[in-house]
Length: 72
Image (cartoon, rainbow, N blue to C red; front, side, top):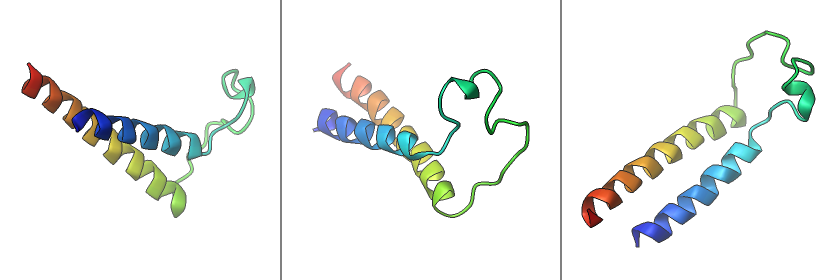
């Protein structure tokens, strides 16, 4: 049961990470694009996706540790 829940959480985390808007392509790695050194606050749906990603990641880690303790 825990393994299935972890798989579902992993897919949800991957989906949320892919939904987050970032600079695309290699220009983001080389310093080009929109990475011009300014800070933009997260608002609206972007903030909800960001917080949900963190919450699901923490839940995933807790379940992974719990599974180690239960099976260990």
